[in-house]
Length: 247
Image 1: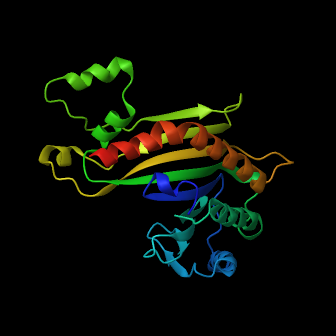
Image 2 (image 1 turned 135 degrees about the horizontal axis):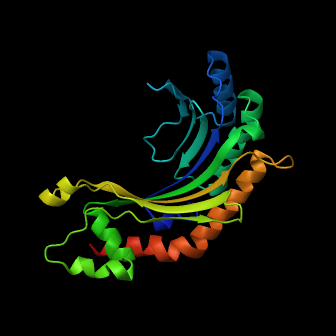
């Protein structure tokens, strides 16, 4: 189990490399890239092309833990759901970033943004928005609104984005995504859905001449660990878990 498994129902680590120019999409290039990925991770054997022209290579999803990677028009993505160890997911992302310059012609100059995302899913049958408001609270200026007669929260997805350097090129965003809509609140019919907390570290712009994609990934990894361990676990994840357990 990874270090965050006990805090949520599902945990995943995703990496997105967005480019300024379109990526190559020829049959030979795409298959050669994914064959190299599969050589490292043999269980990634399910290849498909989506309607929008995105190419996907992934493991079987029925085990609850799996790897995936995609090539989109201007983005290369990689992810692992419920990794046994977070370093396993980071090794996959590092391989993708090492292959991209040579096999997809992605130059550090062509980097629009590099993202590393830690996702935490909580399974909950009920009003996600009300739960988040109760578990995390509203700002003091808004708290009394909940005292209005018959008030029910139908949209509350707090988020905050921080710049971590003076140039605002290194950023971190914490956001919460609810799957509850007004119809479900009105009818009281709630399916069992995932309430998700996202922590995303992002580095904007071309990389410097002495920096590689691997260096940038290391920097983003440290940001994610620092933010999750020092702020998100005790102030967001554990309060949500306690609120769900009490329902």
